[in-house]
Amino acid sequence: MVQTKIYGLRAHLDPIKSALSDVIHTCVMEALQYPADKRAHRFFPLDAADFFYPAGRTERYTIIEFSMIEGRSVETKKQLMRLLFERVQALGISAQDLEMTIFETPKQNWGFRGLPGDEHQLNYKIEV
Image (tube, rainbow, N blue to C red; front, side):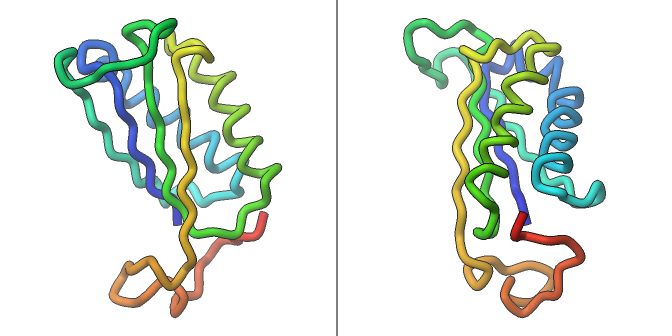
């Protein structure tokens, strides 16, 4: 399971939401060997008064947070980051303006489709 939150300034995030979702999902599918039908993205477009960002970033500054079941290798997670740094540039987001965080939790800390996560038989691998 992977859930994704995307934060950015409304004026720059709203026009690229669909394209950015596509880029994120293709990177997740490639790096994590994730199924195409499991996209779970939530966008948080913020007004300038609600989004402060570090010096050296532009108004295209974007934060992506991944919440996922633990088990992916360090190299797999780094590959996801590398793919995103490369591919978001086509949307006008520089590597300098992108920050990502991966939060991992055990299967038993997830609940979906009526069961705790550790009681599900997933149709994809976590240990990649």
